[in-house]
Image (cartoon, rainbow, N blue to C red; front, side, top):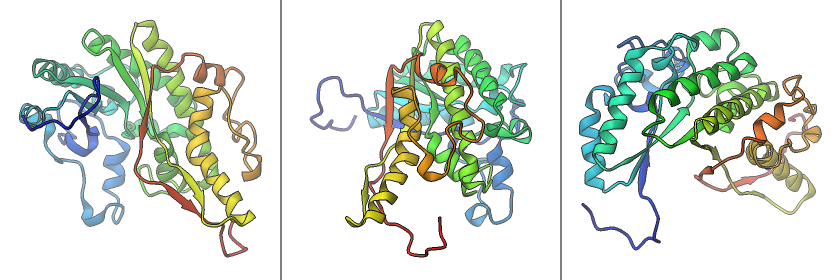
Length: 309
């Protein structure tokens, strides 16, 4: 085991992955296609045509990977569960072979003295749900809660804490607004219903997990935002970016309300997505922890082209 840094008592040393990045085995044991399988197969979508079909082959080599974690001296391991492996179409029935893999993984981690911390959704939506509208479709939030309950009922006796969503900002903006990630849509502000429906799915799932005595977390990609200059235009641009990147996803969870989006031309109901009672579902279950994925600060300047929004 390597020498430890002088860290505070109670600090836990861990590592994190995502299912599509490492598992491979995309067509084995009943796994259904995900939006990343479809997106990666699109010519030019991913550099050099890379896919997650094999990746690190974690599905077959997880015992070796856990041995590496032990060598690193890890206390915990955050991984994501592939929704298409558990529910190939994103709806009942569940796939027993898919759940069995995570049974084996959790047992092996615990045997190695490593605490498992699963993420239920790290952007690999079942393709069948995307075909029905994906996170733009309100029904996906209810399908997510159903899936969360299935997985928790199988693993909750050994896994006391769960992350519902990973970085809904990134999935909304890169996946639905700008088309850089799967599913590759380019809807700009009209992608925002996908943000609300992810948060609604979190709230619905959180209620079910809490009913089972489990702790609930969510991981957001947060960034400190600063204007490029003290000019009014840059100050306004920085405020707008902070609203979209940080407050759009934290305010409903922590305060029970969305920030004012009127200055961005977004209606209060986020293009018809927000319904009465939704914010109570998102807020009232409460959070047992807030994951902060921090990469960099963001410096924002107003557009220099008057024709840009």
